[in-house]
Length: 99
Image: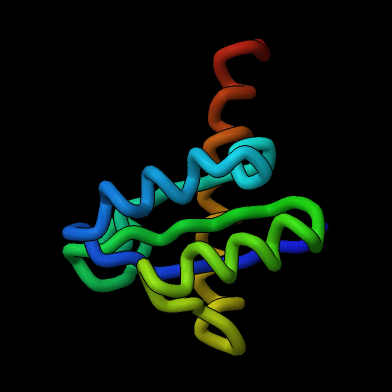
């Protein structure tokens, strides 16, 4: 599955919300996290989208004017932190349903 990651300033939240409501993007996996909670700068959000390559190309076009794409080693590190957080949360939920 393809993915794309952006950092978006908090003061652009209204524009971000409009982009995420796009017909194609709204059907993809979307994760929005306060960047400070994931080791980034306060006052911004990390936006992770996962889905089809076509949707990721559209996301890059629509999110480009709103924020900064995180790519390379920086993007990989943030992506891994977000995925680890998701996996840890899933593992924690398992404790509620096991003996």
